[in-house]
Image 1 (spheres, rainbow, N blue to C red):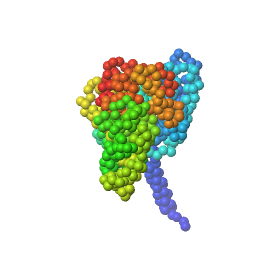
Image 2 (image 1 turned 90 degrees about the horizontal axis):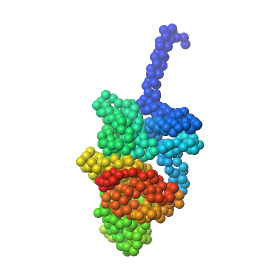
Image 3 (image 1 turned 90 degrees about the vertical axis):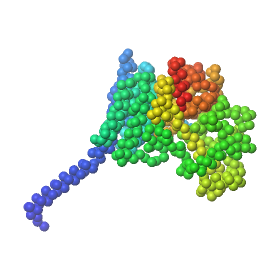
Image 4 (image 1 turned 45 degrees about the horizontal axis):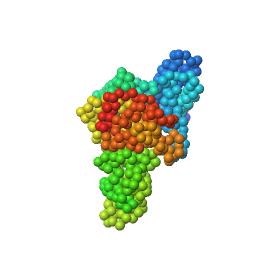
Length: 604
């Protein structure tokens, strides 16, 4: 059918208009025009920049003929690479934690106990050890190899990033976790032990946070205040780069805590709600030091294993009742005494009947629910498993959960309490219920109300000047915070809290320090060489009540403990300990510093 020229002109104009409108809508809807897509592209660009720095700046220096100035040039190039890494760290740590360990993980073998395997470390911290304190050209081949491995991991990260989808909720989660990472790891020098660039790197992190937040900024005072706070944190870190002089207490109270709080509230204002999934560090924790920041049920192995009031009450009664031991000889509370912060005050735990002693000290149960391994050798993965081991150990309780269940089943009162705690069991008492009830009670033994906690919640009078100085030493010069992570002060690694660490520090057999304690620690159960003399990093909370100290109770005072670390641990005592994970250098703490450190720990 023929069309009139007028119709054809109208059709052509309409078609062009539709194409224009569709193109406009398409451009408006294309991911490249959204803040999330822009952020995605920015992170990809920053990954490319890091890759480029490694290949075009650091690697060529390694290939140069050695000169007197080469060491300084290498170190400057390395620091530039670390600064570039800090621009992407919030996202790579969040989305790709396994790969991130190979980019910026500790320079120690990664041990997979279940697979009885160990994997060699790699990444920036391994490279750091090859060029600090001064570059030795004899390390050239190793350095080239490590840079090659690192660029491979960066390129793997880019591939993973290209298929990663962002959401606003994830971005705000990333930002808050990065603030927590700076508090708990960054300013302690956890990943900068030799180059000492922790503070400038923290400044780079807060610059990155500003870049991200600009994409969510509006004209409100809340938005402006949030950006100004992040800018203030950046400035404070950049203007005070000295690692030992940096005032961490002031930084946390003035910048980091308010920043994490405002990120939470600003996200909610934008209708970006925190996740409600179960995590050890709650996704809606306003700060790292909030009273209820941590969920003690997070490590319960099933939903059914979580607490309820009846289960807690039952577990408490079982904890203090000798019914679980053979011959009713002792209860859990016999060794874990509430007035001693759930320890027993002995150097080494007494065996059943007091006929002998174990090789290890009785640890506190306070905050035990917030670690991913129990016992000094981390052999139990849950509080329930711990209860099983203790009850069945001939020298500890010499009991039987099956026997205990049968005994309890004969009591109408016990049956009633178990039925209230485990209504689905229909009155039948099972061994697993005993384990879970005990664990439920232990998960209530959470203590975040020390004078230190009060200080970190803004009550500045809670700590005196010496104790604040002790905290700054703890997180700085004394290097305590690189293993005992704030705020739990144990070895569960923040901010994901996905793993509890052990360390090899070379504890002596006696206070005289002439020989290493013969207890092989985690090696006894794993037979993995890196774990010889390795023990769980315990919490330091309530440490003023849990003397004597170390896994074997060798030191009776905190002054002795500080002196041991000040000398460089077992290596400093002269022990041949190739796998010591504690830095073997002397800390060079003076008398006042040691006193301040002890004063701070007693405030925990």
